[in-house]
Image 1 (cartoon, chains in turn purple, brown, red, cyan):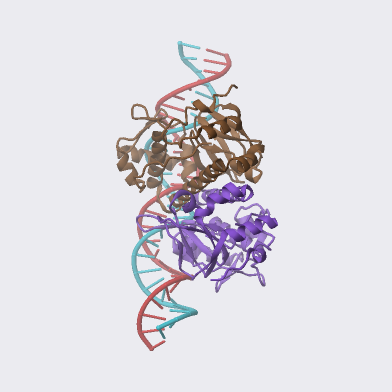
Image 2 (tube, helix red, strand yellow):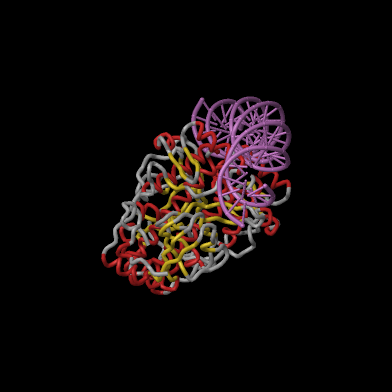
Length: 243
Length: 243
DNA sequence: CGGCAGCTTGACTACGGTCAATGACCGTGG
DNA sequence: CCACGGTCATTGACCGTAGTCAAGCTGCCG
């Protein structure tokens, strides 16, 4: 697959992401070894396996999830364009979770073996990498707080509000709608709810006129209201570095 | 407070931690600016505030927790000797959670402003820092899976098994007991349970003879059994870098 | 048209929350 | 030295949120 060169990377134009210096663009250009397409439903990285690659998502959506021994599954979070996946395996040896495509995904491919080079030659990029890890960690902390403290309605509002905000910041909102290619069972596994209760909770949110979700499209008529229900502060999505 | 020099750091001797090269010791020696004591109950870092410092825990135990607007609290995880705290604030500007001492803590103090120097001069240490972030992230993922998928008994077994293993690996097991200076309400807030149900769950575990916990001391008669109840693989605690 | 996956709805159940009373322990002050 | 009050843990009674089981429904694809 031919690679789009980083200089004209469509993602980096988005306000959500930090600008690169020309130097950084050049480095990433050399760091990137290609692109990969994963079909909807495909596995990007598999729990328990190591991978010679890490990836930045260019397009498409996915999930990170942990499989328990007894078959239960927990979706750790959702993966959106701009997210880096595979860093764990790159650092720790093997993936501790599975990354799966929910819609077709286009990925930017980096070679794990060259990660050390990044640390020794490009402290700025190494810093960004650590920064990305810290943001991820913060987000997981918020997720823990949500699962630990909030009830089903709040959890659902929280998840949808986060998705809505993120996709909006990515410029994926068209006609007041964002794409939402997840199934209810994935939401359920992300929020620690049963599929049945997920369905009921969604219908409550619909009847409250907080969301409209059908045909893989989500519309939020009153963002403030949903954020309030989710008890999320009305802050802006912070600009983040891109790998 | 006079500082113990890194060359004879008591923590680094423990098997749990990676060895430093003499070079690294020298660098850390210069990176460390002092030590600090925080009394039991004291706040180390406060959610929403920034901090000019980051810390490595030398002794003592604590919690990281998120305060929700309505007063609910979620304990994200427990903090043990060897853990690094304050990296989030150092990178992202302000703390997203609070770090509080559960017992008296002795901390190694580093200056945030010199973090950049670490990245530019010491790629090995920068790599370790990122590594620490990745491990933390993995652990939070496991926590999410626990809160999302497991019932009260499994959660409690999981938490106590993790604490038991970690403290054992730290060499803090004496006479088959590890110190456990947390209150039940802290366990409750960590596991998303009410204090009442936490007490009941603990008494179930006791009656199953899985744990003995009194007077801030925890004893696990049959580690395998507890790990099995917690559905935790019987792996060794991985050696980790120390900052 | 048939079959399957995903969603919805109803009926019942149970895990864990809430409220409340009591007990154990400890530090403080009369 | 003991009484008092505070914090933390325990226990009982009751209740509610969310899980389970099961039956239908919808839409899609072969």
